[in-house]
Image (cartoon, rainbow, N blue to C red; front, side, top):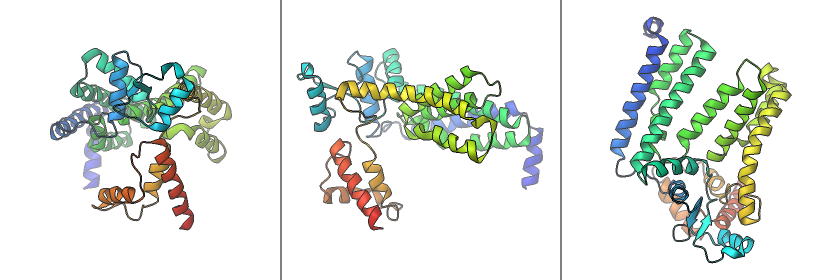
Length: 320
């Protein structure tokens, strides 16, 4: 059976598979949007959406205190900027700011429409598939492996699912794909490395997960001895990446007088991870709710509540 599929793939043009991937992902996307049409915005992602709307109407990248009022952040902001002590709007720092800036552009053009936001994400999905097509062709050429890769990309429904969420997932994926495309170019131009670092920095302010990726590449320099991982290349990429991240940190330092990227920190995520043996069944959500209530945790988005959860998680990990 596999041999038959393999032989049939050899007869199919790579561009035809690319078009097939675009069509199939669009079908997945349309079905998911239809199913979720009354629930397009998850509760956590409202942080991105609210800040985007405020930015689009000229109130800056902020949250009104009626929407989100973390006493720790509010007090810090008023202490740092007493001249603004009567303002209702506090600079948004609970979540990364990258997607909110992108979404603000959509809202500025089309108004506060969740369907406009989702449609814009569909365009990001098309762009992502296009970049992965270029990467696949660059790595495998017209080989059968390129065709198999495109088929796998086409049938993976979560690309489309992530695009239907009004959050930074699909934008982050595109930026990571673009970073890969620019960093592994063979022309060895310094501009490609600078651009790859800038794109990775932008990916970090959408989702901060790859912020330490340059260190992984540094280790790769010694493990793989690949010319792509030379210290010069990594240094240029890392510096331009961390410049973008640094500007994000400077923005938050200006507003709150303390160095931070997000106010939430790793507390809640670390705490959930410390229950990995429990949180994989149908009762997980209820367990989390009950356990947070037992611990006296109010809003998990508050800075001090996350510090409590971080301490509890560290103690649990040490006990294990």
